[in-house]
Image (cartoon, rainbow, N blue to C red; front, side, top):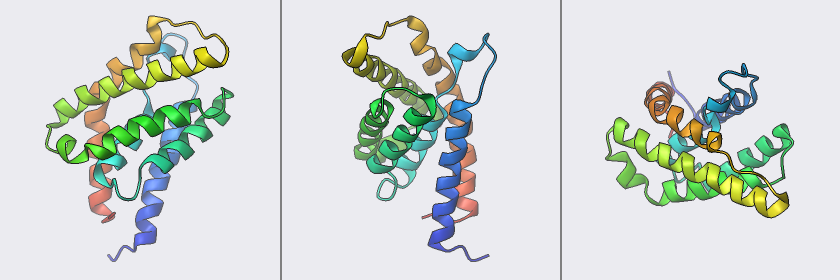
Amino acid sequence: MMVTNANGRQVVWTSLFIALLLQIMPLPDLVVDFRPDWLLLVLCYWAMALPHRYGILTAWLMGVMLDILLGSSLGVRGLALAVVTYIIAIHFQRLRNFSTFQQGLVIALFSVFYHLMIFVLEQLMGGAKFTITALYPAVINAPLWIWVFWVLRDLRRHFKVR
């Protein structure tokens, strides 16, 4: 099966769109504080796998779309995702050499950084209060990274995304 470059882009953008939908999906009150950062995980994967194609601009665009969907301050998540993606893009060769378990720990640290950056930016814009529950997603993102990595890697190999 011959897969064109356009089809590869469709696979990436579809995965980002699904991550965006999962990010805004309603959850029960019991687990809402542990909502995984689906968009962050998928952006991290594509920034490591194809840093020359999907990087800062893609992260910023998806973050602004997330801000619009959440009704939050415009650009906050866009900037936070762009900064995290930039760090991943400049260190992608080093991160690729880590095991998926080690990558999961690094992704958890990036998740903490992402949420702290969102807090600081929202604090500057209007007085957000910090609670430790803002960092709970990092606990979920670390083990979830292994699954996201395997699924997206298999998709990338199946559709020959380059």
